[in-house]
Image (cartoon, rainbow, N blue to C red; front, top):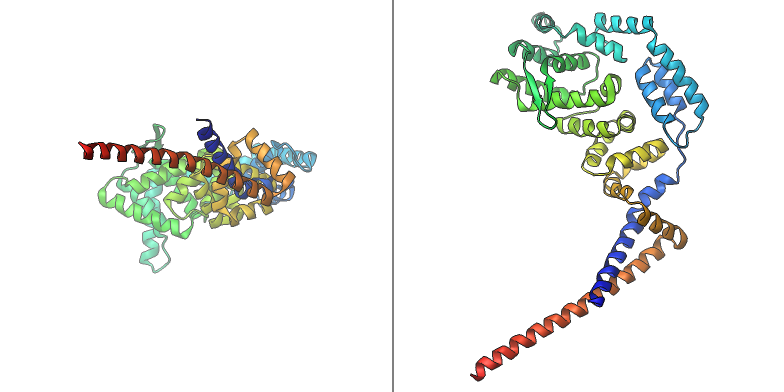
Length: 374
């Protein structure tokens, strides 16, 4: 029994040491990079009028443990907040969104959605797109398809969210999707998926399963990330599975997900899809985002490795001890020692199993000989 226990312990320690010698590099590399100074990016978002995104990013930065230029970031955040919450400023942005159906701020998007929320808005869009097509001008098939779904279903249905028992308003989702299309916040591939889902819904005279998934994903994304960040991420989402993954990760780590998708586009979405399958993907993404573009570049370039290595963030004292040993003796020596331990464990287990096998064969032969003697 002692040999069996020692064999298993040696095997586990050796295997764990080898695994950390290779996969532990991801966390070690991330931890070795100082926190990134996001001040210029915050000010850039402010200058573009993306005040909500700028404020969200500033708040997230200020919640960090080692914030570069903390006082400067705080001053910029306070200035942005005053500008964003000003009554006249908000009223202007909401009014502009209502009138022109365009914008990047939460108020502008909200105004555009309100203007497009009623049934007459769907009829208006159908007439407008039909007129454009009849006169040989470029009609927007996405807006037309969404408007047709709204009219065909009377847009009074509610879609139950099977995961949480939450009802999703089809009316609000259709209006939001039309607004995202008009403001250029939907990718071409996603528009294709959306049109096909709308056609299926119109043909069946009920909301299709694909369109339901889109409505639920949009709701979750915009509830967790907000209108401004959600719209920015939708530019890079090409299919329903990506929308589901991004909305899931956004509910766990909204700002890191927004940073990754905003800066890396389709590659960022693909990394999020991989991380969404990992139990500790959000924690790995949070740490990488704190370190800035270089850490995120590495994160993107080795997304498969990062997703597998994300589990290492869940470990505490054992991992810290192993990482300390790696720093002390080096990864190669750690791998060699771990390999020896692993071989020792296999040898001990092999000896025990071999002995048990020989004993079983001996008993079988003895029993066979007794039967032959009879």
